[in-house]
Image 1: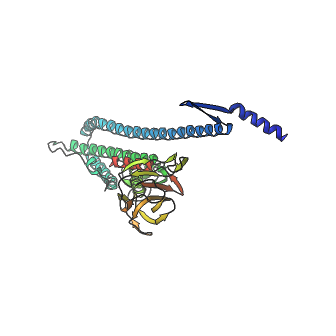
Image 2: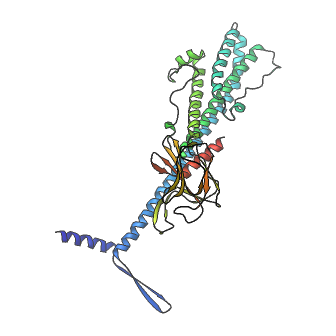
Image 3: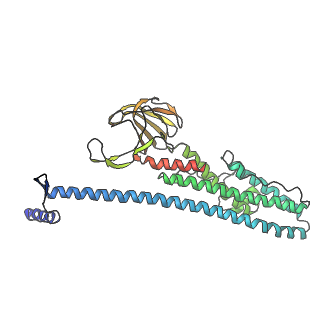
Length: 382
């Protein structure tokens, strides 16, 4: 029974991969080569592995393109919405002037509303403190001194407040979306790094309860909801920006890339092998810099890696800098972003002067190119 089973298996193999003979004639000599079933099966398996890896890599590139396109569309929608709101403001101003001029006893109410809105708006503007470019983008409009109508002047202040909150919403949403895009480009979930809860300089108020928020801010519900929208995006933006400062989004060197992350042919034995990092080539002793702040967890010689520096960045992230000619840090030392940690070399299992750079999260290697692409996105935002 066993022999029949083995015989059937051999017949299937021989049917798909029959023994083939290859003859090559050169300079009057003929050489023959035998392609056994086993060799043909190995070649077919290698081809299938190559096709599978190509499909996986193409899928990853397509996913990044779709993620980037979706985020850009969200940013464009936010800007279009802001422009639409601004276009509506002038029409609302004209109709409000007509109503206020015809209504007696409403001037005090309007003044009180403007004051309350101004106080609530001031809380949101303080959240933008220190955000690069925000001060210029959210600068109030210059007052018009040639308008002698007090009602019109007050309404213009109110409309300017409307413009400011619209700009604040757009500015916060745009910056938060670009940060989320950067995290997605790195293969990270932005929600895992966003802050939980929102504080408007006082007690926490649920976003689903506009009445409670309006009562706390002492403004109308519609304005309170817009304050909440801007504050939510601002908090996300600040949380993601703070998290990004501690993640390895920078480049260890500006040298050219010579080998990327993934399967490649080993330069020593010519066999396919997984390359867990990214290689950069430059002259001997080119400075190598920390890609994020952290604590040096290892500085010395590792088998195959040669002289190596490893930095723990917290949140489960670690970076490795290998084949160095010299190290410039010691274990336990705290390093800053961009600090020099060593010099490029060719120590360990190396065929020439280069840096082998790895990014790890929770004990597994990640593609460093994705983190550097995320860092490029953050630079564009600034």
